Image 1 (tube, rainbow over the protein chains, first blue to last red):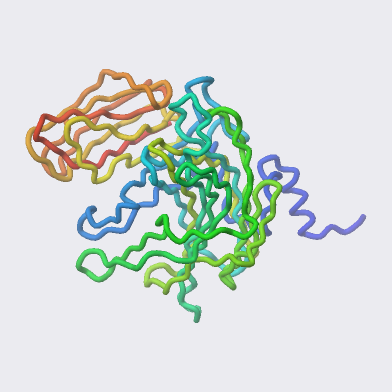
Image 2 (tube, rainbow over the protein chains, first blue to last red):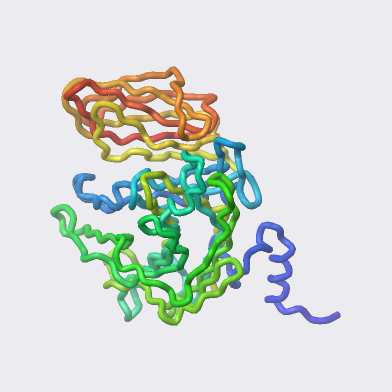
Length: 296
Length: 110
């Protein structure tokens, strides 16, 4: 009988499992979130505050809780998700520049390679009988990471990636990153809480060769699901790969936001998805499922 | 597995005057809901909240339940709901010169 390596056996088992065979996880699955099973720990990104909610930056104050949605539309009913009824829905409000973010908060066990894979789509609110393909400004993803408390390189690292769909009505259709955040601002009076606005509209930069025309479909209520896969190495704190559907992008020029470590965030492993509106119309990002894996 | 349950803050530190409404909230998976309104601060006379349903998240119709908005800081009012379909929101009406700053939380259960 031929010998089978444990890696081959693991892959064979994953490929035979209909839930996992559409993912390419690394050796250990950190979480596999299929939103037909519920919210799976995805929650609202609430801004920092101290003593009063008035101290929260406006960029965060606009956020609200994600929903479980069947993608119901006024013209044909529920669309459903990629492999079931429900998807996680992140909804930005109906004004130009509005944003919303959903986040999952973990910590890591080992500083090594991690991979996040996700099936996603986006649409604006279908309140006009028009294609509306330039009403969603962007959808994107970010990690919020910090080294361990015993590590010598005391940094917080925030890799950002967005698909800039449209800007000021222009159809842009390209992937971008950012390496800068805003200056820190102290909140309250106890010298314990600060904030910064890493999702400010400034400082986004194009990924070289990062243009991509995604399937949007032909009316504002039909969606198609896309596959995204972002690789990051927690050892070097560098991005190592990104693909979306059939395209693989070169991340040689990619840099994450890098800021000094904060005193309460050691080994932080947060991942978040966000959506932005480009017109005074609600914008929606939908996630069918998310698989986060690592080599450890 | 235990039935799904969720607490969703749909308005936080929003100051309402005149007419206001929460953002559309989808909860078609849930059989029951309670919508809580907590006042952080207020001025003038208390207003009223009206539960609304929608076939599409864009066109709204009164569900029939109305309740007083809380008036004093940290007071809470609420409405219990079943058979609401998928979309939920509350619409608020306040008398001229009145305002209330609210946290609105929807608790939903399968």
